[in-house]
Image (cartoon, rainbow, N blue to C red; front, side, top):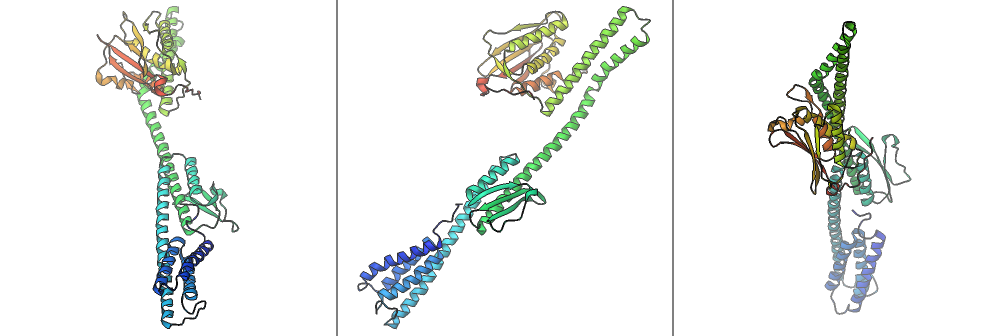
Length: 470
């Protein structure tokens, strides 16, 4: 659609039609003694046809009547008068006038039909493009912006605004302004105010209403999608809560029961217990409290992962430093070297959240240390290629069956000892939040090997990513 209708304005078309008739009459007047009345009539009919195709109905009527006048005044005897000497020539003139008018009207009608068809086709194409653009948008502001752009581009308007429903007011009669509700069924999403440069035509009104309907349908789709997401979130929260209660009831009860029993014994039997027994019970309370603290912390971390609330604070980091801290924590806990590190000197840096990756690698290390033979050490190795930097955690204990290798990293997986596994699931979520991968392989000779693969920035185009912790 164009901002202005194709062709000239009526007054300009009339002057053009008069000029064309004059230009055609001058050569006919010069050779009028050599041509017949049929020649004159056909030439004027052709001119009227051209005017109708080019300029429309009113200019074609003007061309027909002015041609009739010039025909009679300049080309039929007696010349320079409207009188007709031969009655047969008068009949020819009248027939010419009727035929010229009919020809002009039919041609102008065909022209209007063709213009209407082109306009409708253009409108359909624009509405299709608008609908396609709406389908790619998932926010209301994007819908409003696309709607305003389409209207200002394809209609002769000086202003287009989206008003809240509360700001809707009746049109001002002194301005060419339209107000349309953006609504679908009984749901109103806003009001569209459009100010035209001139009073809009019927087709422009219909086009504007069609755009508003398309926008309302797109907004309704977004609203339905948001309702579905909210419903899914509520259902997922209920499911997670139920699963959580069922899965961790045993793990929560055990340390609480042990703590309560030890505290009760200290209170009721303190006069009968030796100092060593009291210290043992105190140590049990502290260990089970730490166990309970770790379990609750894992539950909170898992809830953050499930809710998508994990925020990264990335910086350039050497994964060998993360592995070194994990090995140091393991030494403090076991009072012996349980982890052996093997990293090449040219291992590239990666961008990651140091604290979260420390937690991920620590969870895996604590898990494999539980099954590592006392006379062996867990190995953490570093390697890399053009795409990824890898951390390999090698355990020499029992081999994990292939059907269990994926399940052990699922939330609330029950291990062979009956406890709920959350640490590996949290590690997987943290690694995937860094756009990395984690999987399990068999250790040659027996055992399980965990592999963490983090993308290298030059391979992902994320060299300058820096996310602030929220």
